[in-house]
Length: 111
Image (tube, rainbow, N blue to C red):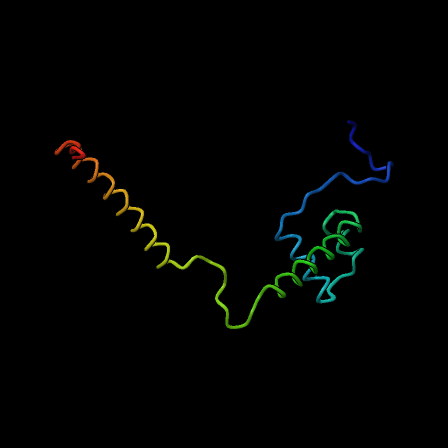
């Protein structure tokens, strides 16, 4: 594939980091720049900025719809995670003790 020159009218493909996308979106929200200015400053096509704006808006709406006031976030409770780890540790220890007991005493008869 050949690289597009300045006379071809196409820009080289440029990928923006999430923080760059966020800064562009915030600038558009605040009215600090237009779509054309933001695209020129970032070195991307205007359609890229339009898509960025659409995706950011949709993501924000979905996040706001999912949030509920007074409800704890879906993160893992550290105490619950610690308790589950302790249960797993004790279960393994109990299995090991059962095996050792079986080996030490041998399997009993089923009389």
